Amino acid sequence: GIQVEQSPPDLILQEGANSTLRCNFSDSVNNLQWFHQNPWGQLINLFYIPSGTKQNGRLSATTVATERYSLLYISSSQTTDSGVYFCAAWGAGGTSYGKLTFGQGTILTVHP
Amino acid sequence: DTGVSQDPRHKITKRGQNVTFRCDPISEHNRLYWYRQTLGQGPEFLTYFQNEAQLEKSRLLSDRFSAERPKGSFSTLEIQRTEQGDSAMYLCASSFSGLNQPQHFGDGTRLSIL
Image (cartoon, rainbow over all chains, first blue to last red; front, side, top):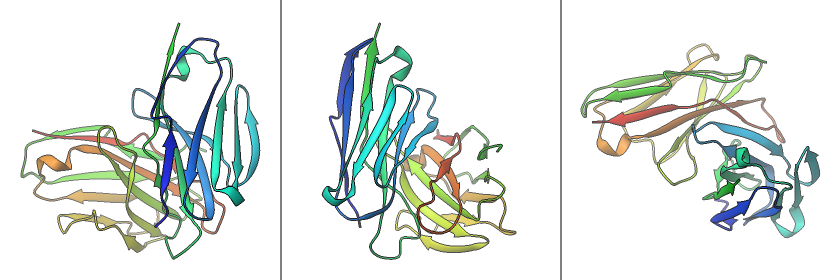
C-alpha cells in the first residue's frame, strides 16, 4: 500500500513565526488531507488537497501530485496552533475503497 | 451539518470485559470508516462500510473485533475479551462515495483497559 512520510517530526516556534510542514507519499493519490489534532484528541480537517493550492486564513497547502509531495504552510503562528499535524492519503492503486493512510505526524509547539 | 458523532467519549474497563462503541455519521454520507490510534502514532485503518455492507477489514481487526452498520446509518464497533493492547483512541469517519471525497472524523472514543 501507499507509504506516507512527514517531516519534521517535531517543530518548536515562537509565536508569530512561519513554518512549513512536508508530506511525501509513495504513489498516486485519489485523496490527500491535512488534519490538526488538538490536545483533546480531536482531528480537525484543515485541507482536502489531492492537487493544487488552497488557502484558509493563516494556513495554506500545496500538493504537487506529479512529484508526490504536499506542503502545509502556517504563517504568523499562534499558541493555539500547537498540536499534531497529520497528512493522510488514499492511494490510487488497488481497491482500498478510500481508506486513508496517515503519516506519523509533526508535533508543533508554539511558545508565547 | 451536525458532524460525525461518537459515543462514549471515554471508556474505562477491566481486562476481559466486552465494550461497544457507537458512531453516527453525517446523515448524507454512505461511507463509514473506523480507525484506531495508539499513543504517539497516526490513526490506522480498521474497517470500512459502504451503506450496510462491510467491504474491507484490516489485518489489525482480530477475531475479537466486530463492526456492524445494520441499516446503513449508525455503526457499532464491539471488542470482546478486551486486552491491554486494545487501549487506544477509536475514531470514526464518514464520506460520500466516489473518488475525491474528503473524510470527516468524529471526536473519537478513548478506551483505557485496567
